[in-house]
Length: 610
Image 1 (cartoon, rainbow, N blue to C red):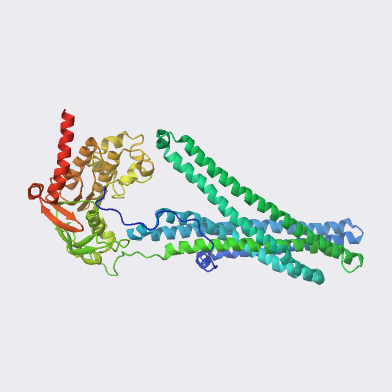
Image 2 (cartoon, helix red, strand yellow):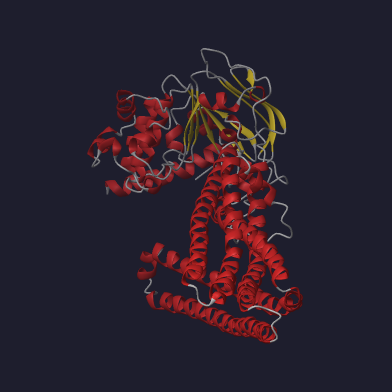
């Protein structure tokens, strides 16, 4: 285990999907990204205008067919002429709709891709302290669920909103052109139709969100149960897990039933209101036709256009909620884009000496983690590690051992004191240059879902095939790597799942070998291994440590007996320094730790011998 507990993480659980924002202001970020593609925006806008206009022109085409085609005694040529006009409108509408769909969908995907790239690029620059205060799973949710909302806003919602707004405005103008009196009555009646639909629509959306939460609960239970299937079956808890799953399914069904009931009522209200209004309009118009004040074609066009206008304004009330949710998602992503790293290169960074020597010095360093300001991880700590020296850092959990590595790689800066690499203060150097001179072998090897070759090349991406195999031999990893089904091209699975713990650790050592860094940081590199794996890993480490400055953190004191110097820490301070022999005789903290561990080891050895 690490020498100390990790800093407190503020967000242990992923947040829920983006909630609706109070305003549309955050959408400005989306517009800035969209405006980078003016040609596509122009084509989408033109197609939008054409389709909206063509939609309103279709009722006008029917009016001409009725009033000028049928009114001329059923003249076949006249009817055909106006139907050809109507077909032309339909073709224009089809082409315009396809064009609009292509460009707005293209913009949606392109904008989301750009935002994801920018957010990821910024995340890669942020300091570890940010990820200790912000849950990675919550950040992942922003990169997936929130960007999906933005894609919907750019690729669908905005287009639908603008199209319906244009159709609504053009439609109202055309209605007043056709029949001002009927149009006035329609404007008065529209709110009576829309308001009930809006009311029930909000209720349905609320219940729909609850329904999605219940479905998510099902997914969580399935993932949890399948992930822990061995434990479930080992404790004979299959029936309990089935009951728990059945309860979640029933809750999902009850929520869905409520949603269905609301939608059924909303459908009844909407159909009654809309078609009732249309019947009233047709009734009034029919009286006008009977009195000769309105033509039949006008009434027909008026009814169709009124339906388009009512639908357009009804859709606007729906998309407004989508825009608010998109604004909430944009705001959350904008927070990630605007986050600035606490550790950054100075404006004029100093160069580290060449060739590197590998001297590391901590001078009166005091440090508190940003998430734990009430306790000091290091207090007035001073230590100089000479080039080529191996220094072991030991002590109880929470002593501050792992903090030394965090500060050495400049993941944090101390509040007090100075850390120097080859005589140059770390704060005056580009962090990337500092890390190029260090190779880390962590307690638990971090492998990526990639090939063995790519995992090894993480230490040196330009390494040749011969250099990779040479590093594998040095790390006692060559044999099992050659036995893999596809050799170095074998996919290792998530977290290197296809390898054992000892193999993963030797992969991490080989990666450090390829790094060819003058300073080696070993953090509990053998603590979780069995005896055989530990021997192989320790042999590899011995070769890796040769001619390098090495800092070793270890709870197993047997692994640090060969160190040039052992530094014993407690509560962020150095309490003892010396070799294994001198510290064992001193009777201090190291002697107590050694007595406990070596007595246990001797007992285990005697048991095996017996």
